[in-house]
Length: 293
Image 1 (cartoon, rainbow, N blue to C red):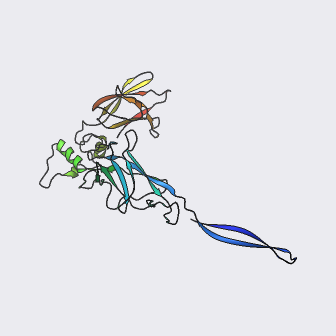
Image 2: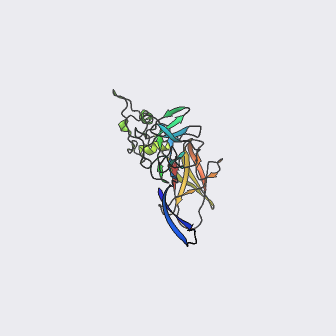
Image 3: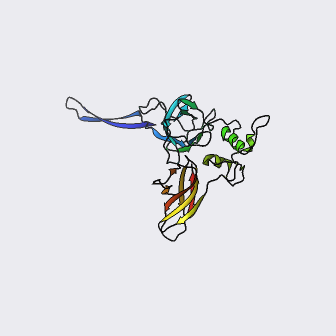
């Protein structure tokens, strides 16, 4: 941004030989470059492997690039959030004459790419094509989940997971290989009311109607509600409550007999598990739901 500064200079000139003082006013206009950097744009989301498991915080990194050059990288975050990576990409006015210029700065609408580096090997996520996603506005946020693995049919689900589901269901490959069109993201192969994509995310079998997550009240106590739920080892679980089905709030619960109280916890076993949560005060009805990551 070019800022015009008007500087008023008063020059007093004393005329010699007894002459009077004369004031001469000069108006000078001069340019000044002022380029404060814009707030960064945030990309965040979940990084999962080809079987739907969240990548652990074991040194793997997410690297964003523009034109083949990195503009930022972050490590995988520990469990307990609604995302396991978060990166802030710098944005400014992109003028090299500014002292605030950042060489890695990106502009709104500019295309970036991302790779996930695991044990020194970089993998291109399914969601990243040759052009990559566009950067949003300064101070904005974009959720971008990243899925590792091959996706030959381009439906957003990893081929390895789709093949595993078909194998579990007893489907065999034909002359042209596996018919992965049987497992579409929006479909419901086993007819249990849960989409194939949601079964991938939650870790259940998309081809077995007996494999599903549930949440039910096991015991009502004066100050506590004990829920029964199905958990899978390594998956993260959170219970939320609402009084109107519109506004939901995380409930601090204890998952299992040995766990501590927290809004979100990672399961340490596969099978039915009990979760103890505080019972709300007052006569107003409360509704509960289970979130699985």
